Length: 515
Image 1 (tube, rainbow, N blue to C red):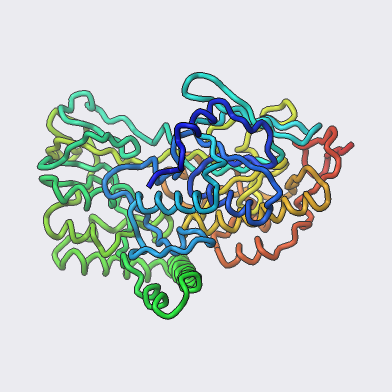
Image 2 (image 1 turned 180 degrees about the vertical axis):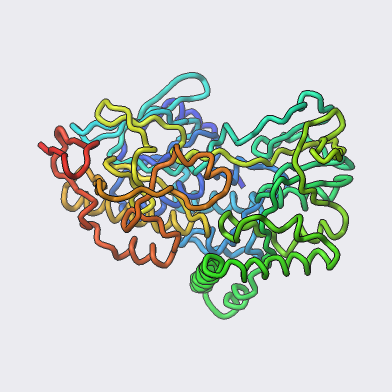
């Protein structure tokens, strides 16, 4: 399946955009960007919009990552859109299937015709005088272009596409084989019959290993710290039973509700009774790996479940690969690379022909865009996040950020529909500016409460959340569903402004002036 009917013409349009002004500009043509566009078309059909995408294909994460076995660890009944039922056989699927699903959603709704490829947004400048964002994009040929909009919607994901977390290891230059980071997987890499060491224990590592182990001589997962790994069925039998008696749309909705409730229950149980959940996870791992396997060393982290994200493996494929002897786990620290492998601090050496550095992502919430408000640079790390989507004292700007304890799309679907509610109110009341006004007495909390390394590394560069609603991120779909769908827009925090002249946008509620 292609990413649109005429890619060549779309790339030309990207370099010389015909649309100079739109009502809404969406940045990013991935899962949340395409979803936001569909919500906008359905709820606000009179609004003009465009999508700018830095790459030359839609799909975001699911087009960028091409390493073996790439898949989501979320089920497609919650990772899928609310408006497009997932009808595939499996519930946990590979990256290409997710990319095809996103593409189908774009083409079916005509969203693909609004995408301008090869547009890497570098700056967004707001002018209160005409309630306009001027968005500057760079292109691969070195040129730049600008598009103006009234409302800017950032759907660029949560990590850097160009700069992953990649620590340097002593002696790398001595290694005679290939060193590969999964984010930049080379198409010519041949691991058949080779000894492979994968550094890391997160979602990428547990996905890579079963796939590579099918043809590699052996694959070793080298981890400094274990991760909780849970086996989940690749096929949702409940969904298949519903499909036999209900319409695809109704079966999908009911399965989606079931999945949301089950996932929320597991998360809540983990937070309230971590010891109990820990025992269940370790018992499952022991059952899959056999009674003599050292689960205590290799699959027991020094933290509670959901202090960091759990890794889900479909039908226990990672465990099965280890049990068959195709892969193994080593829990040690690295001393240095050698010409033939990796030397550990214990003195042991792991032989390797290929080393995969599955060392993680670099968090990047707003796509490395420089924001300027009425001529003054805006440091987004100093803002507070409103309802998980907007930013304090920042006009006409929203960002999609999914759940950390559930599928990304659940939150982006809700937030997209909520932004449409805001746009409708702005249109009806002829208020061209909307700003969440921060309460200066509200205490700050970290944006994300997980202890995962890539969140902790970026903590100081992220916006903050507040200690209470509507600045608190509850990571609870049912609560967000009620607040986003039925909560008041006039909540005493969100300010709709009729005047677009000389607004003190950057000021707090206590000291602003409006002409």
